[in-house]
Image (cartoon, rainbow over all chains, first blue to last red):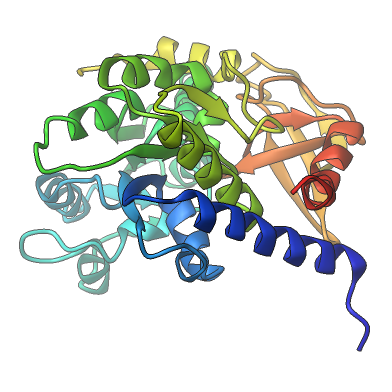
Length: 272
Length: 75
């Protein structure tokens, strides 16, 4: 069967870029892919197997599930046990273990737990069941927080008083900054997330980059995006510079999404 | 995803803006409350849990789709 010319060109590009990275890495380097979607893409496309052994990729904290602490999971399970509450959540929180059980087990034992694709679906559930308090479990970073902010503003405008949010959202900068309190952390660069950066903008990484001298490169989720990001991190290390670079310009600007940030500022306050 | 049609306007939470979008023959409705720039039919949007977060014109989207070919020529 004849190969698609675009596919062939992409495969060639990936191979050649990989060779550039292999040639460039003359000493051990470790980069953290901050975002869970990057981690999934790296595994799905076998990117680690393409890289030289001296280049290590470390999975970072930008997974909504991973950064939700157990005591918060316990609180969410506790909420779901109330007969007057319907808990609404993304599916990925369902199987996360608390100290004794999980939301999935609570649901199996009769707790009212609804899985939704969008927090706005929680408002429909609230309207359908006005005698229950519908609680959306808010986990994740600015991308999810801005979506939840819009949902809260809609609930307020429509006076849907039986909808609330258990907010355990995180601020990307604060999460990354906290990592540098770990003396054992040995990272030579950050592969910064795509969608979060669409909201917060590339400039959000500048304070981190300047304070800790850590190269930061924002990349998309396609294998070529990720390899380009790694390539830029390698080059910054070889040149002994630390700057914020954006190889996901088709989705990320320097300033970020002002509309989304404005909605978050209206609804949330940071307790960082 | 390509925007097919739009209803409502940004900032009106009583009647939130919604777009019918399509990708690979699948059509879904997404909210436009938090998008950085209100799209027009024919524009493309990046979607995160049911909400568009970034708008690209058709040309920008085409450039994105062609980006990999450009990279292939550059490396």
